[in-house]
Length: 230
Length: 230
DNA sequence: ATGCATTTTTGCCTAGCATGCAAAATGTGG
DNA sequence: CCACATTTTGCATGCTAGGCAAAAATGCAT
Image 1: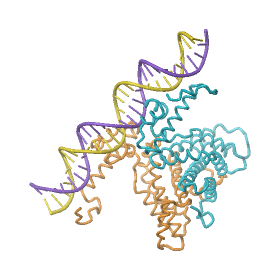
Image 2 (image 1 turned 120 degrees about the vertical axis):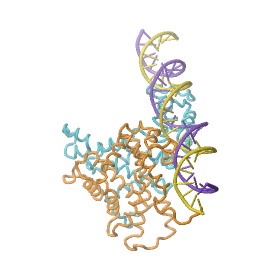
Image 3 (image 1 turned 90 degrees about the vertical axis):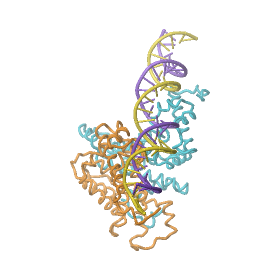
Image 4 (image 1 turned 60 degrees about the vertical axis):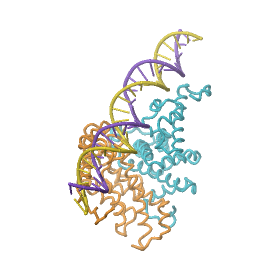
């Protein structure tokens, strides 16, 4: 226990704050150590020690060691989902998705350093990148449901009652289109981020992001001249 | 290093054959046991015993226990890549990709049982599904390169010599478009397979596949009436 | 403040994963 | 049959993961 100093701040219970602090300390220690020595050579013991807790405690916060490197923001998915539902009714599904994701990623360029560190750690070991993908995969289904709701509620009835029977059917077997849209959207963001990171700060993320979604909206035609940038 | 002749002509040697047999026995035992008891409860020891080798030998064939469940076809990526390059010159990049992938997946409905078993094992534990995704992710880059080559060679010169300088640049930083196309294509296939598996044999895979790529080519517009199927 | 209930941390223990190393077993070629 | 190369195997080691119960920390009511 290193941080016994700061205790008096208001807000919620001390327990909650301590828990969040411990979790943050663990992730930060994990990422920092991984950036220095390579993720593969960072043991749970080292992370725990750097965070000032016992190795056993680590597993009270993460199901697996790798999660400490990957788990960045658990509520990101929920925010994007809300963004899709709250997007202006005039937008097409793809546009709504674009806007929701753009809003979520707006802070990327601000918290640029953290993301860069994370990106370097992840890309250094494909193993972790896969795990990161898996995390996003979990959100994908929820996103597809949100898109389904946006389509079902439709532009006609803003807050109309949804048929109760078809609701359950929707959960059981989502439509192909929203599933595809959610999956492709997530993939597009991934490619945009990777491409942006690869070109070390030589172009703004916003531009890459916009370009990717233009490609999608155009039906992925062969780029001729104008759209042709690396 | 006494190379009398080419000794790696085929599986002629007894050694090679035995190795392939052992690997096949391991994967089969792994999948079979996983389908029965759940992948999480299948130990390396159990797999090895079922395959008739020592536990230590298992790790001579796989880097990790989970690989035994996932490693299905290592040359699939290479085939798709070739398919993209050999596709008729008249096709658009997206169409070329669609054809290459369709050719690769043609055998899916034939080897239907094997795929179903694998699919059930994978979907039962998201952990493995992620690993499977990672495997496909590795192919994605190669696929992007193939698409780049198809674009670069272009419809003008069928087999023209590639500039040596730009070749290396291409490897270093691929264009955004082929990267996006490769990633989105892979994702589309994944969604198609998942959707097909979810609707237990109620529709032909070919139809789902075609529909998904129609969505992509149309720029993912909101489906109205005609395209609206689950 | 004190005592009690709840939650969190911690140490201990077990099972399993993964790898290096060297000896034994097995296939290969002369 | 004899060297040679490759593969398998046992052994030893370190790390991951989680169950369990004791101990510490915290919240709450009195």
